[in-house]
Length: 320
Image (cartoon, rainbow, N blue to C red; front, side, top):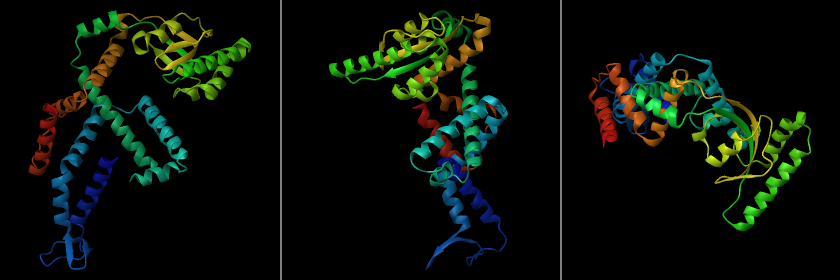
């Protein structure tokens, strides 16, 4: 958010430096941007100070936005990401007794439309960087992932009953889980999904409580082993009749569906994305390094010494 504010501020300064006679002027002819009694700051001086301190960030943001829009086209998936993020911040704002507009204004963002544009640009840049990382993934890595980590996909709903690290709380959580299972056993099959959703809202401590605990299309290596085994052993529309204990707590799991493992040739792009995701999680600087390479691909050339100095410092920081 701060970066976006800087872009707006620098844009205003550029307007100031080119405005025609609307502002008071110093003796040397420079326009005054701001003043107090006995002291005036020219637009030129203000611009130079800001460029020296923030010019690198602003300029590189502008370049990155261009690259992101060249590499990644608009799509329904990006729109879904933006809308879901807007929904999240709307709920967050409401939990603080604020409207989304007030929350954004408090954080220096003028409008929801501006925030949506920022989110879209950020998402496109993330996808462009991951695409660049994907060019380094080898066929051998893809085959190894397919053989060792790629599996059929499950979709389930679950209710999580958490516990603290003491014996009494284990017992209380286990008994609560048994109570939930008992309630599920009392309903007809046609009412099972609705009842499960209602119980998730009432009892689940997982962040997915408001979607009935939905977890879609996950594979064996993406959840803890106990959760996978319990989910795998269920039939569609069947739920666990005993609580499933993991490090997160006790789970009640309702299986929704299962899809078989794809052939390697059909799964390559998906596997590449998952390997990229793993690499990013393991190396906090990988995306920054890939972004430097992406800028090289677009033949980045910096002619301003202040901006070049800032960019070189950034590159040095990720190389150490």
